Image (cartoon, rainbow, N blue to C red; front, side, top):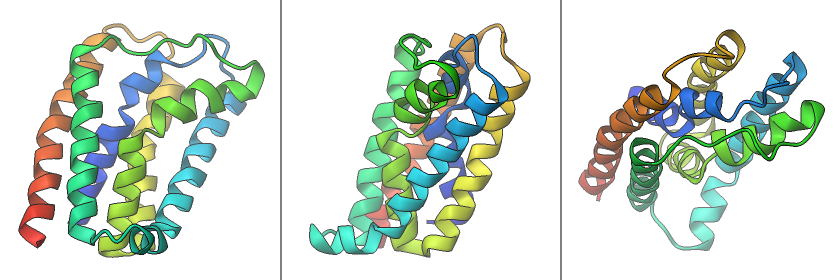
Length: 177
């Protein structure tokens, strides 16, 4: 999996507009920092444990890529056809960045599997680099557009792009086998 494909797939998995829809109305800078930091830590843990985890369950790197592509497809189709998540219920204060933003909205199963597959394929450093690059649009969207219009259509647009990227990730895994 190339770095470009990994970054684009991670952006689609984290979908900045889905995150914006789930942004608590009283979100502060600390809330947004907590969301991005918690997501980064979760991605780091996923990437670091990728090799032992895949060895434990006896799954190859290409099979992990196929699984990541399928997970991305499910998340992307949900973004296309379902309404974006809401900010309720959310924890109070900066903890609102943890629930609902960091988990389950930004750090979805697709992002976790992409981190695992990317680290198994290209190494932990590349997977983390891709995650940092992918979280930049999420952080920017959350910080500069608190009341953006057309969140639903933008969420669906990124979801539609995610379906194509999911197919590319699955094909990349199939060709590697």
